[in-house]
Image 1 (spheres, helix red, strand yellow):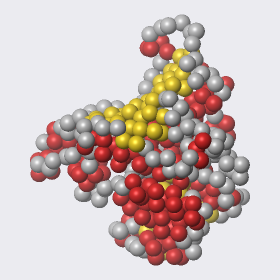
Image 2: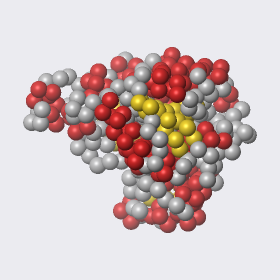
Image 3: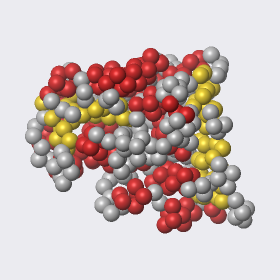
Length: 407
């Protein structure tokens, strides 16, 4: 049995509760995880979480609404699943107290916060791993493997999006005590870029021989929420929503590649991340789940749709081959894989697959997008949080023993 990891769970809303019930309880039951303390501003959430942990065979955790006190109980790690606005503040405090951090996704609100994360890591040696589960999506990892093997040739362009009808979740924000409502009311930006950009960064070796240079963002008008609320909640429909219905962000890379991100969450649609990778020898498109390689007959997409399964035997990523020996759920395995990557980092003091430089790079996109949208799509420089080290960090760190490495 793997060495037990001790941790503090901060944030017990929808994501925190889902992860507790679908992933963490399995690790508690196996003896690999001890949640020593839980933290949330709402006591009912903490007590429910404590009941779940106790039922799974763990010790009843300490409950505290103050994250500083929750972290003071003697843990080696913490998991931050709270509202977006709180991630950096909690992460920096934990790192300064020698506690390894895993933080759920969410964009930053101030560029200084991104630099604070990096400065804290470089001063303390304690990493903040961004828990971007989509980096471990089955197709994303198969295509990553194909790209690294040169099957798609030189990668020239990638695109993706967070394309998910969230109108009900946003509308019920006050009832469910959820942070999206206030963000959609007050901000207009690419507010959730990491699901698509995380996997793309792995494909393009960002911060490891390549980097993001500039971005431009434009947003459509905001009409979807008012239309949705007009018959469901007329009072809330009076509110002005700052967030445009569709935000398009274009990024240029030092290696010459381009990236297009799409935020599309307040109009009717089916879920899609739209992950697409274009190279000189072929492409992958997630919406139709197809691979097309140079030299193949040109046929309608309808004939290619779903053919990616034909490439699984040859190009399935080794991480997924291992996972399927004992598949456990949570967004079709992505949650299980990303959290096991974090726990492996904590347990073995290995290098996290998504490090603090990656976290800062991914988190800064939201605030830079906000500035670009507000100024008519003007280009924004994306900082080099590695201070030039991306040029020489062409290999995954030599001290890494993490079996979940993405490079």
